[in-house]
Each structure stands twice: as structure tokens, then as C-alpha cells.
Image (cartoon, helix red, strand yellow):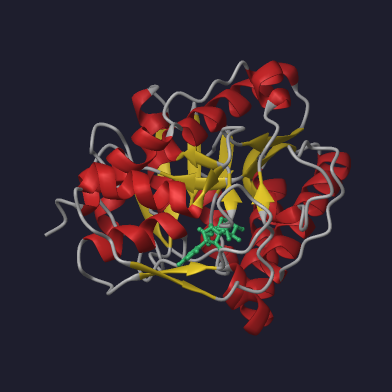
Length: 323
Ligand code: WQD
């Protein structure tokens, strides 16, 4: 089968592309390299350097005949989305409309979409299942929810089947070390910790230690990118055989606090990783943990690399040798 991985040069996209190649798929990467890395594109994959706002290139590319699109191209900084919403509306929503329209015209019938736990907003209950109300707290989460709604309409009106995969906190690196691209100016906890460990940043700022959690710091559900990539393939194969759309949470179902992540990083790296407690970051919920019962039941998906040790050791293996 031929897949077009849109955003395939990114942190998650490169892991998804790698796994599709490992499973014998023909992969074409479509990426503008705004945040993705050229070094993350494998020689076995074809590459189109273009933007999802470039409709004509999208349509010409899709005329190549693809069995499915994997759509991971998005701006994802929740904080930035609140100060420059127009950038997120244009790239995430208008960009996706281009993808859907090009797919409609060229006859692509399956889309696997990178959605996010950010669609839920402040949790009303934990663990979060797919029936939890969707009230995004930031504009980034709003764009992801809007795209899910667009997918539903294009399914109803154009017969494009989709899987909206609601990632919790993606982390880790390919255990075989085949992907080495580092995120540019990361804001997420684990890459920030790694930049402190390698001396690129002076210290970690812990955004509040007065949350109603065991140690007072924020608790999140970290899911390894290799486990995420596996879920993409299983979702595509499910849609291909069942011809029905899916909305699934992808998480480890385990909560880790900021301090637990920090301590594990210190252990695997052997580095001191200095940290200071600062005030809470606006919009941060105390705890976000997934229920992945549906993905496990429907896809037979089982995360294998999402324990704290693997998450941090696979990451340190890349950052620690990045020179
Ligand atoms: C994790 C925890 C912070 C940085 C975001 C997006 C979400 C998704 C994943 C794409 C929180 C704390 C963090 C730091 C800290 N993105 N923290 N110091 O906010 O859970 O989710 O990334 O889909 O949409 O919102 O991830 O890694 O930023 O924060 O103390 O320098 O680490 O308060 O408790 P988050 P994060």
C-alpha cells in the first residue's frame, strides 16, 4: 500500500514514516521543513518539500494515487496558539481543508489524523475516555477539534473514512536510534529537560508544585512515539478492512508527575539537571491521564515502550550523543 505522510519530517511524523517503511509500505513524505528535519527523511521514502497551504502541489502530489494519508502537519504550541491564533487557524484548519479537498478530488479514501488530548480541556473525570466532553482550553486544541468535525462531514458527504487519534503526551525516540532530529526550540517538558541535561539550557523551570497531586507537580500521560506509530498502522489497517471511522485516545494510561520525569531523567543521564519551582503556567490542568480501553479493544493496540525508563533512556540516547 502507498501512504502519503504529511508532516513526515517532524518528530512524530518521522517515527510514523519509519514504522510504515519497516512494515513494507511505500512512503512519500510531504513536508515544508518548517519544524521538521531533512535528516529525518529516510532514503527509502520519496520526499515532496511543500506546504499544505500550497493547494496545487497537494493535489498534484495526491494524483500519484495513495491508499491513505497520514496527516501530522500542524503547529502545536498550545501557548503560542493563544497569542497568534491566526497562524494556527490558517495552518491547522485551512491547511487541512486543502488536504481534504485534494483527497476528495483525487479519490484518496482513508485519512489517519493526528489529533490531541487538548480537545478535552479541563478534565471532568480521570481517566479521560472518548466520551468525555470536548471543551478545549487553548486555540490549538480548538483547531484539532474543528478538524475532527471537518473529517466527520467529509466522511458523511465524500465517503472519506478517518481515524482521529487523540495523542496524550508524545515522548521518547526510536529504540534503535535511527531518528536523530532534535526539536527546534521545544516547549514540552522532556525535550526541555534534555536541553538542560546537555547544557543548552541553564535550568528547568517547574511550573508550579502546588497542584492537588501526590508531589504537587503536574501529572501527564506520556506515550512513546513508537507506540503511537504502531497505533497509526493498526488504525489504517482497521479502516481498510472495516470501512468505518474511529476516534481513539492514545495514552499509556499511567500518570507521571514533573518531578518523577525529572528524577528518571537524572538517573538515565547521570546529569544533575538543575531545576527551580516557578509559578503555574496558565491553562495547565493538574492531571491528564488517558483511558485507552477503546484503542486496545478495537485495534488490539498495546503500548510497549511507554514506561518511564524507556521514555527517558531512548530520548537521552539521542540528546546525550547530539554533540
Ligand atoms: C507537561 C507538564 C507542565 C515544561 C502539550 C500541549 C498538548 C500536546 C502535548 C500536542 C505540565 C510541565 C512543562 C516546562 C514544566 N501537544 N512543564 N516545565 O502542556 O501537557 O501538553 O504538549 O499535541 O496539546 O498542550 O505538555 O510537556 O508542555 O507539559 O513544569 O518547562 O510539564 O506544567 O505539567 P502539556 P508539556
